[in-house]
Length: 285
Image: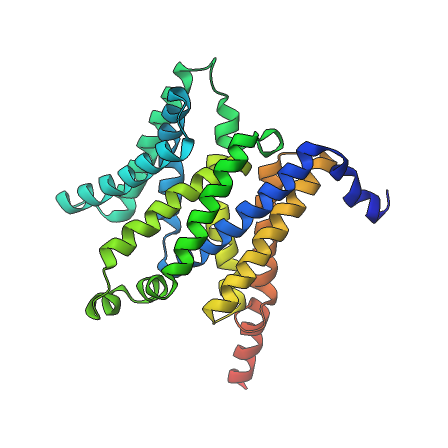
């Protein structure tokens, strides 16, 4: 099969065209948010929220309301629970995060087991972008627009909040508001990612593009562009690869993102392993 045919064959199927477009959109949104998550050091928080939304998604599905509503309520609820337990006990934050997100995730599993005839567990856990409905596409589009517009409007404040929240607070920026805005966007974006890679892998889409870009640039604007480019590339190519090898779409997307990170980790011109080794030898001489 030649290269042109390799790219053209999937486009003959309407479900593949939808899958590629939705994957690219989700790649942009998750990548944009991942830059802020990387700067803030919220990888574990992203993991917690992405897993904690599961019971909300199931309840919303059963009640026939938008999944984003259920995810938002439980995502923000998990953050409030983490803050409450942390402030009232001597348990450290990372332990509290682990306790809360596993508890919420387990609750979601219980709820799914009680509505087997109504919802497919594998679609929640691993995504189902190849079978995405028009209503889910519209929901993903709305979430994407809300997230990107909010990030654009609050860009400067969010950057300062992620770099140095103490300084942001000292100059009068409402850091509590920004904290909950960022976590609310995280909850909504988890739903968008759920459609493509599922709850288990969505944390990779919320962390890996930003981490990859962080190795390649010291400027936030460049970091954002690189993250988006890597997110879209891995989402589109991962969907193509999954079609040709008949594999998991979400798995292919995340494996490709991880591969890009490994390449950046080794070959990044300033912060890569090879560059660091070269600098170390130069200093040694």
